[in-house]
Length: 188
Image (spheres, rainbow, N blue to C red):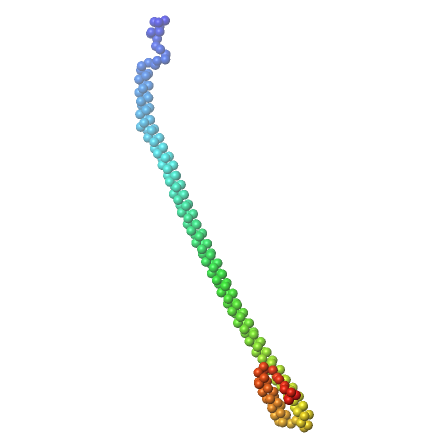
């Protein structure tokens, strides 16, 4: 069996020709892989890395834009609040001015009503005084006719007597200083 074993080849060890062909084929596969496949893999990896880095840069730029927009929004909000406060203050001032104008108008109206009332009171007083003068004159003429014992029916005489009595009455009122009528014991 030794003889047979020496002439027979070992099935675990391939023949030398197959080893050489295998090495050449392997070298060819390595060269093709290095020349065509490896650069394509590099290109795909580079594109993927650039896409990832570009995405990160875009995300960072978008984040910066978002921050800028947020700051702009906050500035606009602060400006709007300031403007709203100014509008509120202006409205308050305008309301205060309107209130002052209404108060002034009410004061003027009140003064006008008071003046009109005083005028009416003075006119009514004068009318009452005139009416009382007429009544006092008629009573004075009647009393004077009884005292004198003669009729003062004559218009001219009656007017003269009434006017003289009223003048004396006015003089007494003026000398009194209070504006009221005082009748002394002699006049009664």
